[in-house]
Length: 182
Image (cartoon, rainbow, N blue to C red; front, top):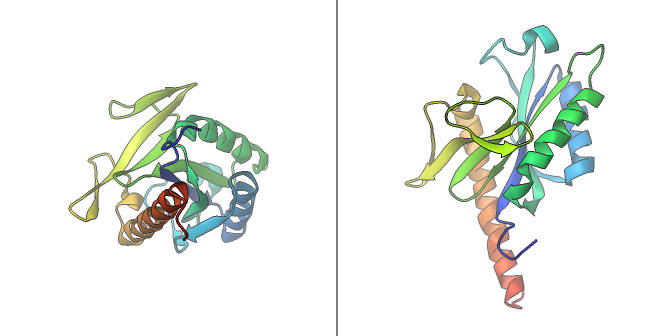
């Protein structure tokens, strides 16, 4: 990777048909993307019934970010990989976990999706990027299309914490690039 391209934090929006399936999904993504450094509390996913037919009632949600810095150019490939992982964790053709990768940089939170919309940017191979939150005036702000669970206080607090961790990591990286000690 060229210098300066690793400027974001990869995160995963995880849905599980139970906390057990959520934990299994976290273990699976860590084998692929490295250790999780920050995680939100687990909370009930009651914002839509969209996943209920496939995953059942009692779906739980958690967000997690990964320790290493991330090149946003990898988002398309990671979305494709997580779709394969979801299939591996399925039972009887139904997903037990839903994995929504995205990234956070200092100015925005972006999700990967396979659904087209006027506010999404095509990345290729059926994958789109969706700006979801933007950072301005010392806070995250939603767009009109931002999902309800990305608007709630617990989620915004999580992304605030991830942003602070990213700033710390970028400072450390810049110090290493100049030969400074940490």
